[in-house]
Image (cartoon, rainbow, N blue to C red):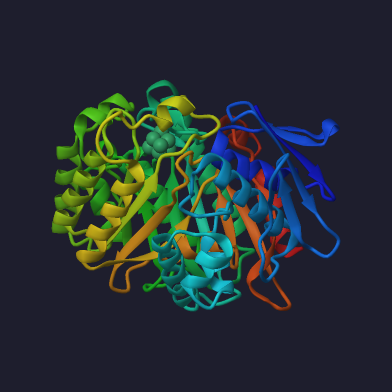
Length: 471
Ligand code: SF4
């Protein structure tokens, strides 16, 4: 068991973040002043922060300290701990000692990708990715007025449950009855709040779950409600996450066209049908291709397709083959996610980490996917990381030309306000801070997660959000 004793600080969270990258799930034992990693090597470390801002991590016979310009204390303790663990385990992480969900935020503070390599030990390919993506995020964000609002509408229902999912999403095969009442409650909430909004709309995103589980009539009714209550301009970005090909019909695509939806997501996750079936999805890769072609024929020219690298039941090379197949289809956006262990997901951490015993590693195959995408004319436009990725990778959205999603960038930046309708949504207000152009102070207003309780208490949820945005 690896033990890290904290001295001169109480940044247990930061210590845990670094330990998690090397040794699995850590345990904070604050009463003993330490964080332990049961799966780590038998060694005892002291992670100390001095008053002058230096941090040293010590074993019984070695000391690790970065000699150079100091970072702020929270980052400095991680840096010395990373140096120690990297040396002890002989492992280097793709993102070095960066553990946050937005490496692009750190990249914005730096003048070059080289600075990320030297100050945070980020691998050159990831440093270059973060640096370029951060500049593209800022370019897209500059299109979104400071006082604008992005809107999220959540439909937490799906046609079946994916094994890796941790969203609060109900399987409609068991809860069909709830869906109708939920849709009615959602319309009620939109009507109650809409009249109090008098701000330009940056982007609207209808997500889930899977919004297209609604039947054609319900789906049209929801879009009618949105378009009649919100000031959606003809050039506003409006996305519908028609995520699961098994829920998309010509009729629903028609409804979207008629309302002027500009962007849809059709998410294959993998183009290998056996994997889809194994993770609990009820569609084939042929279904994905058919729906995609149908949408193109109907005039949708801004389609995003998501892939997940690292799915169990397939090898990392099969992920690369899925990327190649999507590149052949040539949607405007392709987003490459990396599977990570989600807290409420049925899939175990062991399964998340199991990529087969032969062939190339996941890291290598994700890099190959990125290379193929860039070769085909896509560029990265937004990215983020998640907590327990296990393999230390990231999620990256790629776009052709100027097709990057404003909503994705505004949402991830924490620099623009978001109003969320529906169960489980998180509304947020972002306040600029002096001297911090990219880091806003964020206040959040959660909505109750359970769909049934949301239906019962929708008026109360609406009042709470109106007060939140007026405050
Ligand atoms: S489609 Fe998405 S939200 Fe629905 S179960 Fe699968 S991962 Fe979860």
